[in-house]
Image (cartoon, rainbow over all chains, first blue to last red; front, side, top):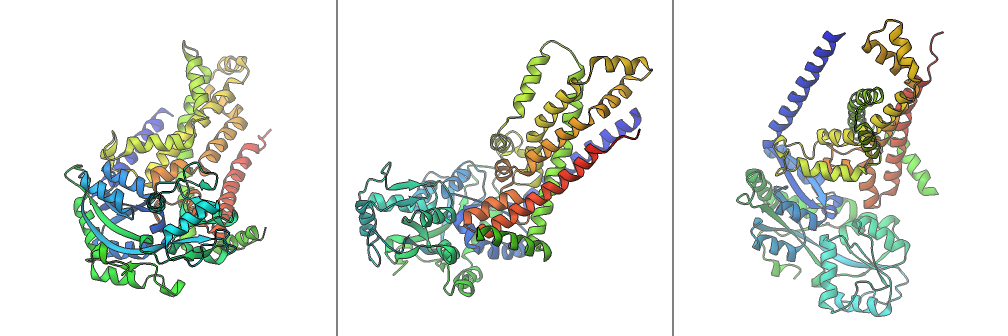
Length: 283
Length: 232
């Protein structure tokens, strides 16, 4: 009995060492991309990542979290490259030396969605600021993501620009959840919410919410790719990060982005912008 | 209600057409949770039985710690395992964060105290004189332990089923240490949360049904072993 026990133990230990070795070796070609849930949910990455992997041989680990968490991962060197859409926080991230080569990739837009009945009467308004003011004063229910995501950051910036108090107000509710979930909550409670167009279109069929306000420049949702600064963290896969960032702004990829979503939704979900200046967008 | 019917229909379609993504996710769930349960079986039963038969100062404190381990929140385990496996953390050099291996480790940490605690109770419950009887009949210590394990078979298998149940259903730790990466570390539970978050309720319900089926089949097999009548 004892002899077999020893052999089994040795075998198990050998397997364990082999397993760890094989995993460690795979790491040079592994790249951690921290991105947002809305980017992942749009399905764009499901198309782009395989193209990149095939072209370069890297294995991309796409970790989809809120923009806030993605940037914290970058700050801690736990990600190699970020694809996020929270410009103010991104600028701070780069200024503080955590990120390098911040490059514009694409944009889409946010819309204010709400119940067909539209109690706050904002349908068709041109100014998002004015629309949000009306929601606040009419005390129509507003459902926020409340999760430090790019969408949440945009929403907060609009409240701030309009000088409106929303924290703790009875008409303001935070789900702390992703966009899809938040849209469902808003639809159930007949409330208004700020959403990116892509997620709205993806759920439109079963969602009882209408697009009420769109097209205002402030509603632009702008995506940048940022490489995590290898000078701050030795373990960052800088080569892989650069390869991915270069890939995202390459003509080939930008063309894929241009037509993504047209067959499913009749309109593209994103607008490719590599090489442009942010000020030019939406004009 | 029709949402649930939609879900059942979708589950049926996904299974019958052997949808590759769903199959992949299901097999990974199986692989990760079964491996974790096996690890917890080896560690949990061996330590649980040893502790049940041993007497030493501080034993009760150790037992209470194990029992507390049964109530360990999986998401807390996930958080701590993540912190340990972070690149810049103590075990970062292994480079196993966001891999199925990390998920197996986290799930083993969750399941082991469960299996250990119940095994401990299962064997400690056996009549004290039984040990002496078996030894008196000429058994070696090892043979005695094996016979006691067989005596406590019902409860020990319940322990394994509890451990398995705890990890096949777990989502917080798997999400954190696995990263829910498509085709690589996505399992049924993390996929369900993701689809729910996206608002794809029919897919989420379909995945839930498949998960329940999987859990049922494995538990059925274990129950058969547990309830098997001993040859008289």
